[in-house]
Image (cartoon, rainbow, N blue to C red; front, side, top):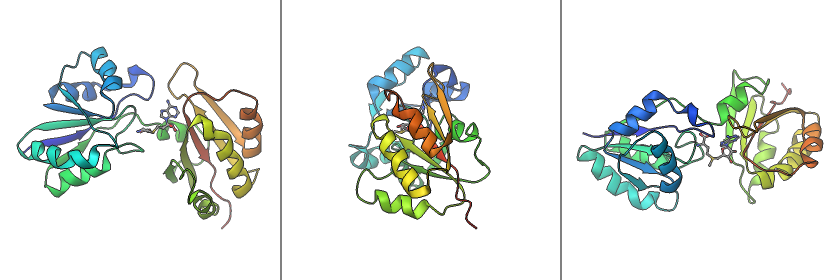
Length: 225
Ligand code: SAM
């Protein structure tokens, strides 16, 4: 019986690749990658020559059966995404479910993901938190935020640069301008920045600059009992 490995890859700093991740990617029979060109650079850097195939949101449904039969025939397969941990706002869940339904062994290696460093260095409570990933782009967006407004645990969101100001504005309207927030940009990269303050302060800060890079927003939980 084969085995499916979920292998986290760096979210910016190539040095964050673990020894075990490199060894696993060298040992498996096949690597499934979200973008073979992006991952090709990482594999070259670590001199990994394992065959690679594309597995992304546009073909994952179609590939499930094929990958399932490869695993059943005894192949070991690793799934990687462009950055971070597969399955976390990236393809992975459907394949894990498929492999488990075939009674195959599934192992996720511990490793890079953007939400954990953002949360832990935010200064907001990190003993309990809610990971929301990306908010819905349009339909259901307001409803989701309203649903979260009385949540007591710290909220963690992923956001793209072009929506950051819109999202902070909506958070300020719905959660209140004085709610605490931490915005992490370009984690582990040369221009990493962590802004900590209130929502209105974050808006003033990011309003005055050109917004590039990748962002994680951590919002303090509601104080309401
Ligand atoms: N699988 C990834 C993980 O484990 O974090 C997440 C992939 S998701 C498609 C990409 C989003 O993750 C970005 O839009 C951003 O919100 C966040 N992200 C990824 N890398 C980041 C970084 N270096 N700094 C800040 N946020 C990052």
